[in-house]
Amino acid sequence: MINDLVADSLTRIRNASMRKLDVTKLMHSKLVEAILVIFQNKGYIESFNVVEEGPKKFINVVLKYDARGQQVINEVKKISKPGRRVYKGRDEIKRFKNGYGTIVVSTSKGVLSNDDAHKAGLGGEVICSIW
Image (cartoon, rainbow, N blue to C red; front, side, top):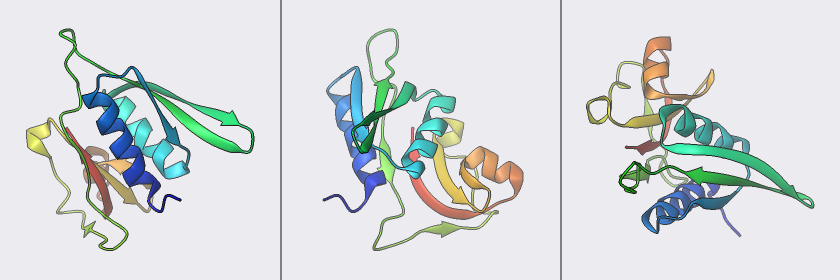
């Protein structure tokens, strides 16, 4: 039984990227799907699709590599954990890794990247970071 689907999904993406796999399979949740939309918009993954297998849903994620075959994802890290939630105000959410990285924030307007949250003037729970 998996308690933290987001942490499990990020670990599966990290491991598959390090092994240079083309596709990885994640368990479905709305939060994981929202995070993957941000990853796809920022160019960290190629695409993803939701697949129903009986009563359960899964997400197939197509990973992205550069022209030399190197992984696009250097590091993906879960920041807010079930035992220790991390919240940032609207003034604390700014650029990450000089604009090369992205922080995913759960706000009152939904799950947003750090750039979108900063433009909207929103703070919230910091879910993960990727670069």
